[in-house]
Image 1 (cartoon, rainbow, N blue to C red):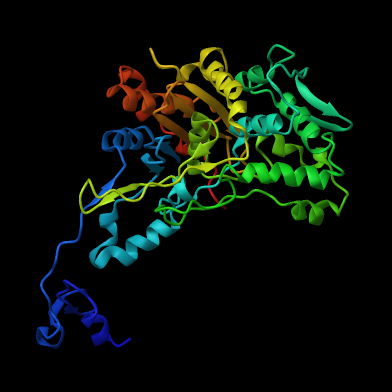
Image 2 (cartoon, rainbow, N blue to C red):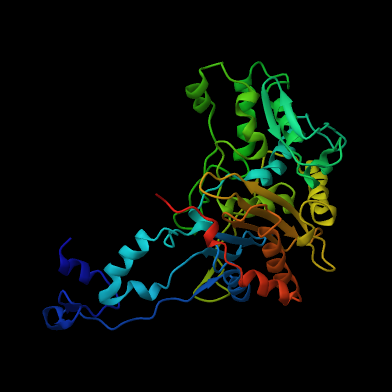
Length: 419
């Protein structure tokens, strides 16, 4: 298209010519194609401003993100990424210089980590494997596996932490037992009347992707990273066709290995559990033009898991905050259901992850917090999520001391710099 044709096709534009120093030199063709500016339509979003501001404050001097979703609608209540940058830096004559500096910044502030950051889900993924195990008929509420500090089979060892043994299904979530999920994964993939490992794996994968993992959400979320859920062909290439088993890919049992997800995926996972098996596409825009001009409501998307299997998982997640791995996520007078995750990371200390929803009955908020290089999920991600939920559900946070402590803590030094 010619420059003139582009101008003729635009509404509400007064085009000014500028020189290479961005100085106005006058109207194009003496204003022949100038038209009066016309105000655009108002855009109404689901973001809760006070919740967003609290999240940004808690994440200052840290690397990571917070995503909060309303389970009953899929509306995003908070979408925090850290570190970020001042958009005013990318205006005027300084924009090229500032963009180059931001692009080269080792902390990568141009990446929106809530949408584009990908992480191993770690132990937060155990709730997915628990649900799939139930759906496959391998797991049930009283199913127990013993743990003596590690999963050991042949020459393979996957370590675990100290807890009582054996655990039932709810207890395996409460205490985040690696051994439990290694045995369960082996029974799902190799011992479940499938003709071969590949068939068992493909059925497992089919159920995993029904949660939305491995794909971008088709909504108004821009540039979302789909994450990664491996295919059987990946392991054929790595080990040889028909030469691998559940033990070859046992890391998938505890949310490690080739799985990667975004924080939006994790928050949506919590919304699914809160809804007992379905979700609405996560989105930000509610209405255009006027509050009553609501966009068409998203249809519910159902997972491959029967709703009956969610009750024991919800109970296990409730026990996590009562007497499990995240008692510091409790909120006075509100029943919180959560799951910690500690994702292994080759670029410094492990990532701290926490997913949760509240209240237990009639959930109003589902949340995921990722704090990079911060260690255990209970250390930083869990208390941040707890404060966010308290703010949203109660309108204020009593634990001002905890807010100040988190705000004043920097974790940037824990990250290894790129070489």
